[in-house]
Amino acid sequence: MWKEDLTICQLMVIFWLLTFFTPPVTSVKHIYIETYGCQMNVADSEVVMGIMHNRGYRITKQISQADVILVNTCSVRENAEQRIFGRLGHFRRYKRQNPGVVIGMLGCMAERLRSKLMEEESIVDVVVGPDEYRKLPGLVESAANGTKGIAVKLSRVENYDDIIPLRTDGISAWISVMRGCDKFCTFCIVPFTRGRERSRSVTNIVGEVEELSTRGFKEVALLGQNVNSYHDGEYDFADLLANIAGVNQSIRVRFTTSHPQGMSDKLLGTIARYNNICNHIHLPVQSGSDRILELMNRTYTSEHYRNLVKKIKSTIRNVSLSTDIIAGFPTETEDDHRMTLDLLEEIRYNGAFMFKYSPRENTPAFKMGDSIPDEVKVRRLNEIIELQQRISRENNQTLIGHTMEVLVEGESKKSKENWTGRTDTNKVVVFPKENSEVGDYVWVKISSATSATLFGEVVNAAGERLSSAAERAAVVFPDSVQTILDQADG
Ligand code: 5AD
Ligand code: SF4
Image 1 (cartoon, protein in one colour):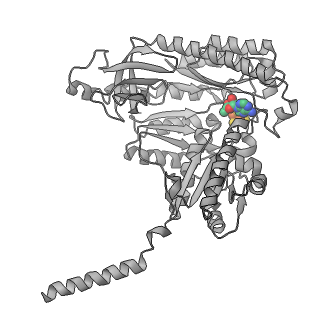
Image 2 (image 1 turned 90 degrees about the vertical axis):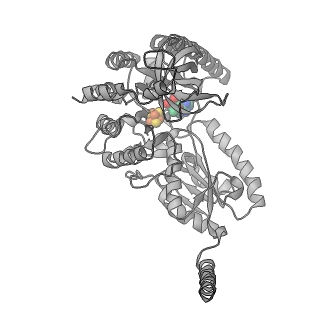
């Protein structure tokens, strides 16, 4: 009895000590972050979350829980910026009801509009450019105490190599391997908002992939504005790819975006050699007209690009190509536009991101004027989209009856009964779940196709429909991956 009384006393003391020394739950600050623009921004937001998490902040998906709202912005086209300004309108109403909340603008718009954001958008407390995220915790803390702050200096060295990005567990991870761009295409704001090229070290990137492998990730996508310019002082992009491919042969390696100038023979050979380096290259061409390419400062002619594509197709079996196109660049004539359509028809890309030219202040193209009327730009863009959709549909329809290896990524948006996944050529495939799980590699026989999606059902590697769970299990990690790699390494 006495013993029991003492235990209760002890418990009371412990309880008292705990309540005294543990900060109340409300003292943990929550961050809500919205990300706009390219995958580089998604990766940057994970770096930002890593930095803030190390300083004790917790991430929330609910704006109503947020003490800090961060918006990671994009400046590449005007409509991206307009969307973000629209969103600020929403945050303004939110801040009126929650005056203590700190609002921060990050990324390219923060870099481009700087003090203008702070002066004209009274709700913005913190403005931080892409190379200054280490200062974010300090700036947020000052803002919470009433002092607004700005940090927008670009750096020649910052690459956040030592920061562990905060990622939720999953199948695919984005890894930013280089930052900035030295290409200075005349239409593009990126060299001004993200600064000069710099690369992380092979050692640290490989370490990150090893860690992702132990956490069960099945795909890494290496990111850089100009990813094939990667160079860490000792190793180039081909070396980096080879090292990453060697970490775990059941992890697929993707990469984006490649510039035609950096597609060396060594790089093509490396992509061909490793079975787990995906046979997909995103290779923006922008225009099919040499005159426009020159005005864009793309540093290649359409003939050089065509020859490069021939070389890629002859080096990498079953390679799939995608591209970016801009319609209505200053002075673009109907003939220039036709050359772009001809190039699309000839190369037959598997996909394209297609944009209407958007003048960006302070870029060299801005000074060329925005000579193409909007309705002409829109018409040309629609012609490009229509043509590319037909080509994508025709390409996909040639795959009907083929059996393709698919990494299961998640539930199809349209049906709970179906999975969605991708082939190594980056084609989206939808199929009934049967016994497969997210993260499995399965063989799917394609039965129908649209311009954007392939549909099929799980079969064994020979193309027969599976009849038992045991057979299905046998194809989850096909031996072929291992065998081909062993041969390639030998
Ligand atoms: N207008 C339209 N499209 C642009 N892009 C970059 N800058 C502009 C601009 N000012 C497109 C290019 C690039 C992609 C990321 O965005 O096609 O490859
Ligand atoms: Fe912009 Fe050209 Fe650099 Fe791509 S390569 S980020 S389009 S400047």
